[in-house]
Image 1: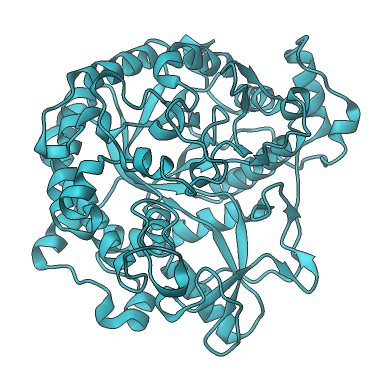
Image 2: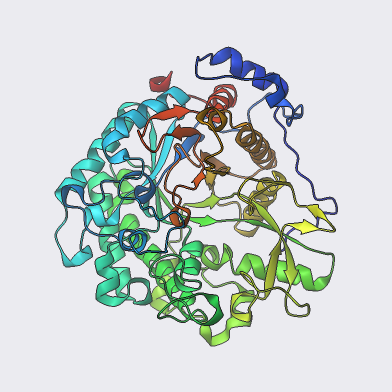
Amino acid sequence: MRGARSSTPSSSPFLPLVVMMVVVALFPSSSFSFSLKSAKPFLRSNVEDDSPFREDFLFGTAASSYQFEGAYLSDGKGISNWDVHSHTPGKIVDGSNGDVAVDSYHLYQEDIKLMKSLGVNSYRFSISWSRILPKGRFGEINQAGIAYYNELIDALVLEGVELFVTLCHFDMPQELEDQYKSWLSSEIQEDFGYYADVCFKYFGDRVKYWSTFNEPNFQVTFGYRDGTFPPSRCSGHFGNCTDGDSETEPYIAAHNIILSHAAAVDVYRTKYQKDQKGMIGIVLHCAWFEPFSDSEADGLATDRANAFFANWFFDPIVLGRYPEEMSQVLGSTLPEFSSKDMEKLKQGLDFLGINHYTSYYIKDCIYSACEPGLGTTRSEGSFQTIQERDGFPMGKRGDLGWQYIYPQGMEKMVTYLKDRYNNVPMIISENGYGEMNSPMLTTGDFLNDVRRVEYMSGYLESLMAAIRKGADVRGYYAWSLLDNFEWTNGYTQRFGICHVDYNTLERTPKLSAKWFKGFIAKYGKTPRALL
């Protein structure tokens, strides 16, 4: 199945003016100024007043250990791959690192108060593998790390916040890279299974939603194809690395991640799930793709784009095989699953985690000339991502350049996954809008984040449309609770619905936080502890 063709690329912001007026009425604040001029980008919504969301729908915000925690060597934590990477000159655009980040390690109580004020009923965060197992299975469990996460989890549970915990959100013990090249070795499967076992044992009695990995499709692409993420491996024109093979290593690393997911699921199913009664899945970055034209070549290229992006991981875990398009293109380059692997893969997952931010047109690069870029080579699928057609952008261009506001992409992406995977439960694990951290903007400018409200409103309405048409979606998490360390972009971009002053670490809710609170109050079921 490929993306539906669209003849009129456009962006459709849906926030009704009345909602903006309600926000002002409900959340008066001396630090919050609002002008009717700010509402000009928004159109009156056709959304129905009745809520399509389940009574137990998860409305939350998302975070990750390296981007939020800081305290990079505190209380026995080991060195992670991102500690090494961010300390290497030239790897982060502003020369920064996550040594302090937004210091959630010490300020988590303040962050929980923010969540409570927003009325969210869930929090998605990740555990720092190197804080729990500084040297992987080659060393001892760090009990101080266990104690920290127990304190965090208990504090969240006390406030009625449901937990969604990711085991690996890009960061891992550097020891495993040094010992055996981490994801390029099958040894990593044993390490990840052991790490998962430790987390399930110590935290699983209170955690109901587990994700094994966050965006491994990005992790292997940036880590092993262009080398911009650790372990900085690439070859040829793909990037500037001292070692690596961009044509083969991404597929080896991905294969070991898929089997590591299977190992963790096997541990959970056999030892913990019956008593703990949780769910386990995996989170993929899921862009929406539409053919650039009505040509058969662009339609087939769109199929390949889906295959080489999210389906690369979802298909083996849900369907037990790599996408046909990948097998046809890659042949023997694509690793094979043994009969033993297939048995573990049968245990699959309980939900699909979907990180969705933007959409692209897809152009064929087999029969047409393409400019060099992500996806254009044979080993990547021979397609090009484009966000303008006939002089018209796919949607309103965002502040970051790559992000175009195309709310329809949410409904289309969710519907595509519903149809492909027989409506397996889905969770929107990330959705958010980024802004440049421009020195020309004041704190007041950042707080009055009208474009983020426009973005969230449109995408949530699109999600509601998908749910009304039968998609089994169980949750939505805004990326992110706070402005934070945005990987190779450092602190040059802000995605938070709460502003962070990086000098003082003071947190302040933005307009989008107040809007999100109003949305949840209207459409969600808020736990008693948060009222």
